[in-house]
Image 1 (cartoon, rainbow, N blue to C red):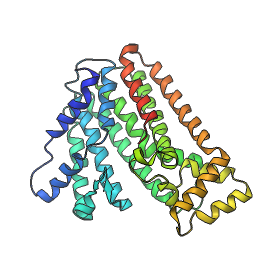
Image 2 (image 1 turned 135 degrees about the horizontal axis):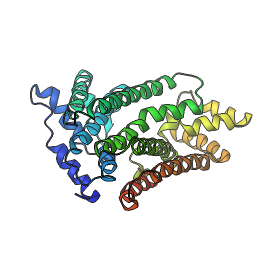
Image 3 (image 1 turned 180 degrees about the horizontal axis):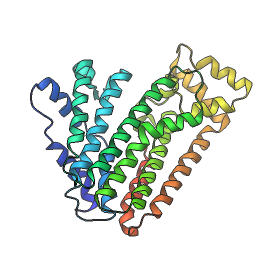
Image 4 (image 1 turned 90 degrees about the vertical axis):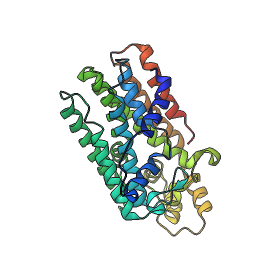
Length: 323
């Protein structure tokens, strides 16, 4: 199996997962959310992390699927907390069923994710489960910080970056580390891959923040300017608030934290401040900084360069995406 085969293999393996049968109201929502598709980045990173060191991926598939089941568990609960009506263009579980179903089905998904690690070799299992548990807790910490920030009047850029590290980046780092450890590589290589994933995750989320403001509505997949409308404390807004002149501060104060009378006018006004302060180029520079740091970690991994190319290519795709 080559890296080109990985996406199809992941999709096929996910289709054959048995989460449980009865009661159907517990398991149908799991099959539903897992069937909505998505980029399947996390299991793909696990396989690519292992492929750096081995061609034998038979023992990697099930643990790789665990990362996707866990990720979708977090999406199911996040959608409920955010009261989001749609996920990948379809009704969210709490909308299609009800909030109690979303909670309980999500709980089962977390259990099933742990079960998918049970075939890991006994010598590796304690370390991998410990790291997975740490990562899962950090993802929850990141989500809680994100919710806290909605009501906190002052959030620093450093706090925001740490929040997205926890909420998004650490799971990507774990996926790569998981593949590397299952392939039997060294502690040093596993750590470099974990750091590569974290840096790519930070760049990925900052790219998402940027697309929300400057993306093409035809390709972005959701409303451009949604973060501005909802007063979400992103790197762009926090940077603007720090750098704004008194006049610009006054304009921001007219829109941020105020009732939205005209959403389009709010987006235009805040984006104009971003343009005046060159926030877009600052965000792009930080994205590139994280990306370059990631590449340095990948360079230090003791694997043939040709084996690194698929991972390098995927990282480029994530950075250049429009949705």
